[in-house]
Length: 584
Image (cartoon, rainbow, N blue to C red; front, top):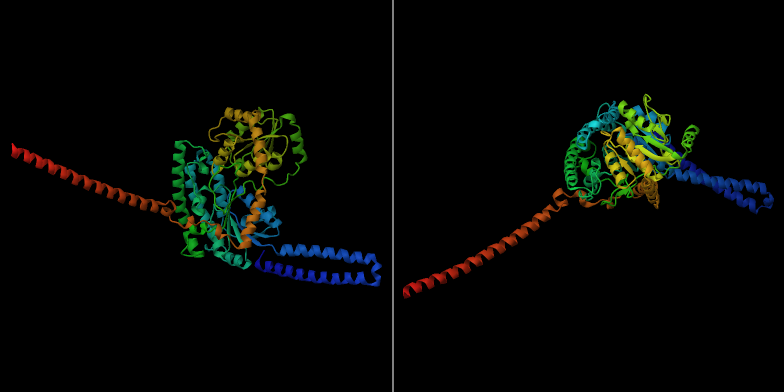
C-alpha cells in the first residue's frame, strides 16, 4: 500500500469514527424520545432503534480497534523458507491484533508472498536477481552438505554475506539499479517498529535510518549474537556453539574445540560484518556508528528456544524465548485420502518423514536407501518427497510433495518423526509428544539434534555417513523402546504448561516495545564496554600490579633485613676470629 493510499485509509477511518459517533448520538436521542413519547407502546419501532444502537456500537468498536492499530515493518531475509514462515506467522498474529503489517520484499517473489499472506501489505524493490542468487546458494548448501563442516560454514557465510550486501544496497537504493525512493516511502508511512532477522543486518540499518525501535527475530539460539549484541555472559564450559552439536556436558576436548570455534567465529564474523556493512552504515546512518553498535541498540531479541528443549544458560532482560511459535496453532482435519491412509495403519501407526528443503537436493542413492528401509517396517509411512519415485518403494509408503506436517504429528496414529532437525519441526514434535529420528546437516540442525538426544526425545544419526542398517536400527529403537514415547509425552506436558503461548508472548513483547517507543532500560551496558573491560582484564592487571608491588616490596625488605643481619653476624664472627688470633 502506497503512502497516499495509507493516508487516505487513515483519514477515512477517522471520518467514519466521527460519523459513527454522531449517528449513535442521534439514535440515543431518538431512543429517549421514543421511550418517553405517547407512542412508546410501539415496541416494533423501539426494537428497531435498539438494534440500530447495538449495530452502531459494534461498528464503532471495530473501527476504533482497527484505527488504533500500529504500523509494523517486516524486513525478512531472502534465505531459508523456514525463517520466512516464522516471521510471517508473527506478522499474521499482529494483524489479528489490529495492526497493519508491511513486508519489504523483492519484486520477483511478491506475487507468491501476496498469495501466501493476503492480509499483509508489501513494499517492493528490484534486487537485480540477488535474492534469487541467495536462494540458489541455499540449494547449493544442501548439494554439498556431505562435505560441509562447522568450519566450512564460516567460508560459506562470507559468500552469502557479500551477496546479502548487494541485496541490501538494492533495498536501500545505494545501487543505481535499486529503488532510491524506498527509504522515503518508509519514512512517510511512519512505522512504529522494524522486525528483522539478525542473520542479515539490513533491517538493523533501516530501523536506525527511520529512527524507530528495532526487534531482532532470531531463528536460532543466537550464540554469536548474544555476546556481541546483548553483552550476555557465555560460559563456554557449558554453553555449546549451536553448529558443533555438543550438549552442556562436554569433555575436555569438546570444551577445547568449543572455545576455539567460538573465538574463531567471533573474530571472523566481527571482521566480516564490519567490512560488509561499513559503507552502508556510514551512508544511511552515521559515520560515528558501526554495524555492531547499531545491532547492540536492538530493543528486543526474540529467540526461538525454550527451557524444556534448550540447555540452561545466562540471559538478559531483552532476550525473550519464544521457541515453537507455530507449534500450538489449531489442528486442521486431514483430507479424506490421508485420513483413510492413517486409519489403515491399524495399531502399528504411521511414521512422518520430512527433510525440509533438503528434499530438493537429496541424492538418488540416499532416497533409495530410505525407501528400502521404510519398506521393511510394519508401520505405514507418509514421506514428503519430490522427484522420481524410488525403485524400492514399498506399498506401505505414501509420497507427497507437501505435508500437513503439524496436523500429521497431532494425529493419534503417529508413532515417530524422521526429520533433519529443523527447529520448527522439532518444536512441533515436542508439542505433540512424538519421538524423533534426526539426521542433521548444517547450521542449527546439529545443535537441535543434540538437544533432542540429551532430553531423551529420540536418536541422532550422521547424514553424511549413515548406512541402511544404522538407519533401520535407529527407527526400530524409537518405535519399540517405550521410554522415548514416555519422555516425549512428559516433555510435551511440560512444554504446554506455560502462562502464555510462545506466540502470545512474542506479540505482547512487540506491543510493549511499540507502546513505550523502545526499551533502552533493558539493554546491558556490557555492549558499550571494550573487550578488556568486559573481561575485567584492566582490573586484573591493576590487582596484579598491586600484588606484584607488595610482594616486591616485601621481598626487597626481607632481603635487606637478611643482608643486614648476615652482615652484623659476619662482622662479629670476624672480630672474634681476630681477637682469637691476637690472643694466641
